[in-house]
Image (tube, rainbow, N blue to C red; front, side):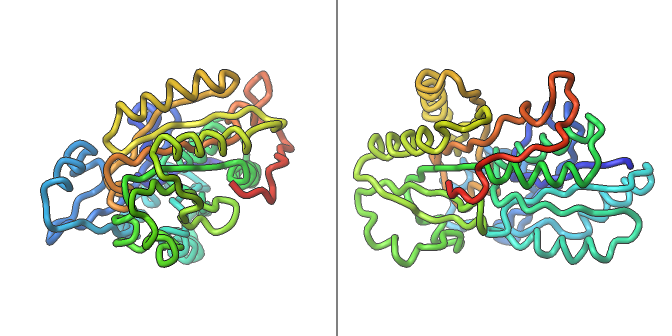
Length: 309
C-alpha cells in the first residue's frame, strides 16, 4: 500500500510543512470580478487584504475543479500510489467534500479516501499533518481514517471577527438571521460545530473586545480541562499579526502545559471572515497518536466523542 496525502489550500500549510510531511495542496479558486485567482498561488495574503481594503467589488470563492484533482490523481497513478487520502475543508461551508465523494466512487485506478474535516485553517492542517505522519510511520489507510475521525472529535475552535458583514454576505453564518440585528457595539464569538455538521454559528456576544477575548479563553480552559490526552493549539489571524502575537503570548503564559503555534487566515477564508479576525483552534496533540518509538498506536480513542466545542 502506497498512500498519498492531499488537502486544499484553506489549511494554510507553510511550504516547509508541505515539504517536511510530503503533503500536496490543491489551491482553491477565488473569483474577483472577471478574474480568477488561486489561493496563495496567484495572490498572497498581504496582497489580498490590501486589495480588499481598496475595492468596491468584493470577491467570492469556488471549490477546486475536478480537473485540478485529476492532475494529482494522474501523477499518483504514474508514481505507483494505491491510495490517496484527500482532506477537505468543512462540508458545512463548502460543497467540495460532497462532490469529492461522488468523484471518488468513479475513480478506479486507485482508492480515494475523502475526509471531511468539519473545520478549516489550522484545524485542517492538523488533520493533514496527522495523516501524513501516519503514512510515514507505516499505518494503513483504515487506521489513518480511524485516527482522523478521532482527532476530529477533539477539535474545538473560537474566533472573533470585527463584524459579521462578510459571513452574512457569503452565506456562511448559519444563524445570521437571528443574530445580525443585535450587533451594534457588540463583539460576536463564533465557532464551528466540528462534532456535528461543521457549520459556522455565533454562539455568544460581549459588549467589549476584551470581554469577548476573556470569554474565548474561558471556553478554551473549560473545554480542555481534565482531558486524558495532551492539548495542542494554534492562534491564527487575518492580517493582524500584532493581535495574534498578543494572543499567543497570553495563552502560553496562562496554559504552560499546552503546546501553541501560529498560522494565518489566508485569502479564501478571509473572503468570508474579513480582516482582523483572530482565532484559536485546539485538538489532541498529534504526538499522542504514536508510541515513544514513533510507531502508530493501534487503538486510539479519545473521550471527546459526543462533546460539543
